[in-house]
Amino acid sequence: MALPIQLLKLMGLSLLSAIVLELLQWLIVFRKPAFRQFKDRLAFNLRKLESIRGGAGGKLASKTPKERKQERLENTLKMETSRQFQSFSLWTKGLSAVGMFMTYRIASKWLDGQVMAKLPFEPQWFFRKVTHKGLPGSDFTDASMTIMFTICTACIKANLGQALQLGPNRAMQKMMMVNQKQMWNSSQNSAKAVLGTS
Image 1 (cartoon, rainbow, N blue to C red):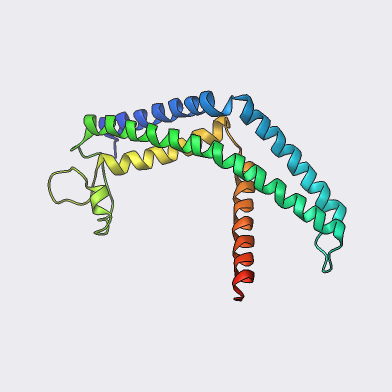
Image 2: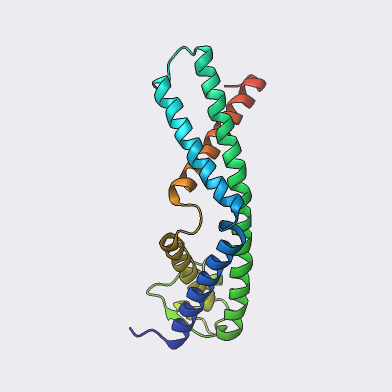
C-alpha cells in the first residue's frame, strides 16, 4: 500500500519538530554548565556508591555503626541526585509538551479532516474518538491525523533522542527511576512503622 502524501507530510513535520525540540532542549538545558556539573557529580556519586558497596561486602544481617553511616551517605547521595535530576527533567518535559502542542496545532490546521491511513481492524469504541477524530463518515477503519501524529511523534522522538544522546543517557534515567522507587518504598515503610501497621 502506497503512503498518501498527507502522511508523508505529517511524518516530515514530526521529524522536523523532534529535531527542533532536541536542539532547543540542548540549548536551554543540556549544554548549560549546571547540567554538565550534574552529570559529572552523578558519575562521581555512582563511583563513590560502588566503592561503598564494594567495601562493605554487600548487605549484612547485623549493621555496625560504619555500615549505618555508609547507608545514610548512600541515601543522601541518592536523594540529592534525584532532586536535581527532577528539576532538569521538568524543564525538558515542559519544553517537549509545549513543542508537541504547537506542532499538533499546525498539523491539525493543515491535515484535519483528511484520512491519513486505513487501519486493518476496527478499533474499540473508546479509541474511536482518537482514531476517527475529525473525519467524516462512519468507516472507523480510517485513521485520523491525531492518531498518526501521536504514533509518528512517539516513534521519531524516542529514536532521535537515543541516536543523538544529547541529554541524560538511559543508564542515568534508569538509576534515577530506581532511586525514586527506593525512596517511595522507604517512605511507605517508615509511614507503616509510624502508624504501627504491617
